[in-house]
Image 1: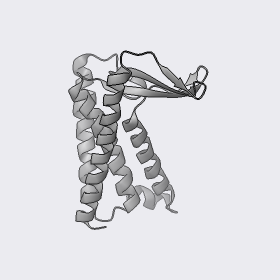
Image 2: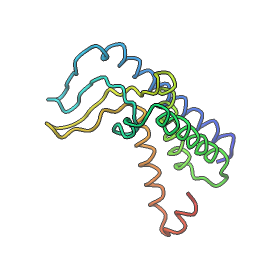
Image 3: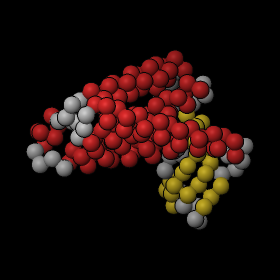
Image 4: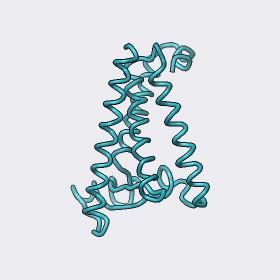
Length: 169
């Protein structure tokens, strides 16, 4: 895939991820923030508003505000920028890896945007589980990131030679 086509594809994926995630977070803020959790399918799926100051599952939420900003805004922003540049500049990057990396960057940028707009917090609102066995509360960006990671792993596993797969990432 040439660079212009890849740039268009990546741009469309980034914009779609960010737009969908931010729209659902706005709905969550408007309708769930002041309401109790809402359960569906016998409490298999739950909508409940949460503001996450940390990273995945709240990791890092106990850091000082300055440390959280340094790690979750500056470091993550730098890593996402690097991933985006890599995705756009690699000549032989397979299509599925371009898509996977664009999904990871798109979800990451949307959560980063949340941190910048909401005093370092990310809005989460979905939860899945059975009884006391539940996931953490998450959002659409988190789902997009996981899909991107899954696609990236599948792409790497498709290579017969593990050394070649690691080298061509």
